[in-house]
Each structure stands twice: as C-alpha cells, then as structure tokens.
Length: 137
Image (cartoon, rainbow, N blue to C red; front, side, top):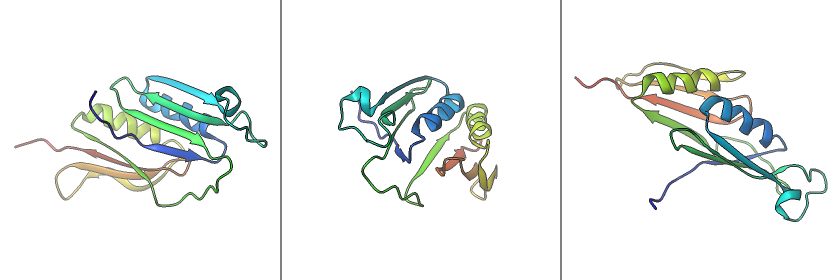
C-alpha cells in the first residue's frame, strides 16, 4: 500500500457537524464513532463527541477528524488544507461548497503564476487553499 498524507482536524465538540459539511462538499463515504462507541475513556461532558471520523471522497481523498476532549482546543493558523490539481470543474465545485458560510481571504481567480488560486477560512475555522493548475501552452 502506498503511503498517504491525510489532514486530521481537531474540533471543539462540532466534529460531526463539520464532517457532514465536508461530506456534502466532497461526496464519498463518512464513518464516525463516538467516544462512547469506541470504548475510549469517556469524555464526561461529551460522551457522544466524535472520537474518530474518516471521510473517503469519491476520488480517494481522505479527511480525518475528531473532537478534542481532555485537551486544550486552541484553533489558530497552524493548519491549512490544500486542494490542488487540474480538474477545474471538480475543484471549483469544492470551492463553492466550502465557501458556504466562509470568510474568503483571497478569491479564487487567476494568480500571477498562471494557476487559479484562492484561500478561505470555512465556517468551522479551518483554512483551505485551492489551486487549479493553469493550462499548459
């Protein structure tokens, strides 16, 4: 099996909602288990919180997440998820769905290096970068 690098995002009690949002954006199959279901030490304040979630999109992209019981949740600029490729229709579709309720920090438009590029922070505070490769001359 080929090694893969997957983003793993921590949420403060809303991982289920976030992962359902991302499933809507990317399609695919979403599997989630709660702390209670997973047999992990229960988070007394949120036993139904998500211990582990994995979304495998139709094109085999993988996104993982969980809620953060027992640890400090400190969102910040320490994670960005990058989507890139040359399938303009697919990537624009992801951009449109992720933009719902987002703060667009750089609109998806032609960049100085010839690609289309945009940045946004989605409604869950996750930073996304989208780069659509320019047409080769």
